[in-house]
Length: 264
Image (cartoon, rainbow, N blue to C red):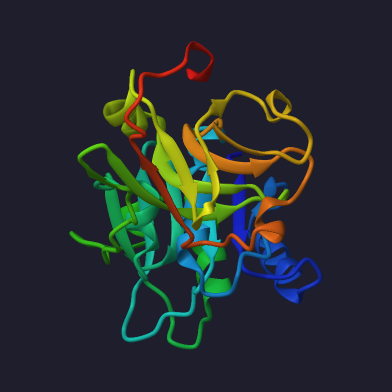
């Protein structure tokens, strides 16, 4: 039986965890339910999409991902079942699917439901129908398009990359939208300076590990997602320097040849 993951904006002690798990187990006894992520800031589909986008491919093919973030349908939004890369996603057509996939899905279904049903019932039943062998087309009506949200990307000018922090992890490390590929495209073989929020917070070195700098020192590194991460070895950089989502990260050319020990 394929697993079902939950990505929610609910606090750990919220009743909705028990309700959705109870519904799923009642409909499909023995189903494996996995808490992918919870306590996502309410209505923050940018945060939720970042989490789902960077986690779902670690699950087996066929996994069903339920997304309860800004999930109440408003303004005639549809509840959707989306198939992409051999995974299934169930959520609300609020733009989150375009942010998760960043590509065209294989199949999009508008889930059919009774007017008195809420999203807990609707998502649980759709997941159960898939688990029991129904095809997506038997669960609702095919759609051609989903709501689009444009992801926030780093911008490139001559010898300048301007990005922003898009995620703060549990340790307070700040993850930016500057990819390793974009950095190398502009600065491979060149001197660079990385500035975060103000000229007081800068470095001219990208390291591999937190321990490559002294405890308490600011550092930048490319993490396992190949995104530029800003941290302080042994401390919470977001709290100490008041970084948050949207904080500007700028890389410019200092105009000198790179030192051998500054290449990561």
